[in-house]
Length: 415
Image (cartoon, rainbow, N blue to C red; front, side):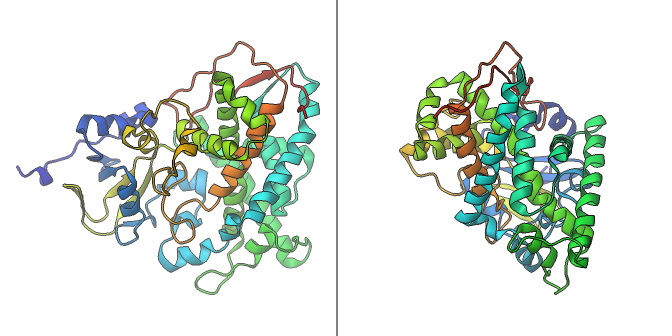
């Protein structure tokens, strides 16, 4: 039998069991950077590497439309989101988010989040201990709502943050986590759809130039405004990913605890090191395991193929831990990013390609800017890390230090 026509074994169950390690394990077994397999009954081609990133993000090869399964749309991205579009429809919708690439946007959001952090710290100091993941999620939720011009009462911030993190926590699983994610999305879509309706009717005024104003006034490629539900979905696609930085804040605290030598340059305000540290947190710690799309035609990649309509899967976690790219990928070493420039399609924790024209996350600059600022806040803050379970399971997606990182004896930031 020809190697290209051999029947493929479905690997969905091992995927669910192995989590982040699933594709790296398959790549290692294949002794290469491409694997043919079957996922959820579909033939699939899994690939990694900078050339593979460019191949994956070329719309002549891979389409995202209809590629995202309903359980992910119903929890993480939302039905009708920009992630589900291709071609002109995608480019026009993405114009909503392109201002997030601008330095002023990064600075503005960072200022709001740091202000929310500073306001929260005295409350943490009054308690014996806090779970950093939970507190960071609330801080980020407060900050991004104020920056985006979305009203949010302080008393509602913690509950809203729980909904935002539930959407992320439950997208890749079944059972109670998934049901919590769906209920959270329903609540938040209803809340924001009401807000869009109130803005358009004149009952609420959106701040000039805000994300809220842009979404309410946006017209798609067909010239029509977004319906209220889709507008709510896209507002959530600004707020939810920002709140999800709580995962990276917890990972930051984990890194500072395990490798405390990184604390001093962050606390001293070394800007270049802070950027390198943020990149290394995003590279080293597991967040996105892989990304998928549908083959736009019969595709061949380095001797492997997938038919039109099959799955094409980009091994994000594996690429961020590829020895050929990083040399010592399982060492946490921020200074690697100071030693040589890293090409756009080498580091892909939030996808690859051109953020202005393709599917790479336009909020990546916001992520880096916020991590720089919050890593410095943590490095300057007085606290202890009591005995706890800080293990990070690669079987759970998304994963987190088991304890959420408990901090005790929190004091105010020094200097």
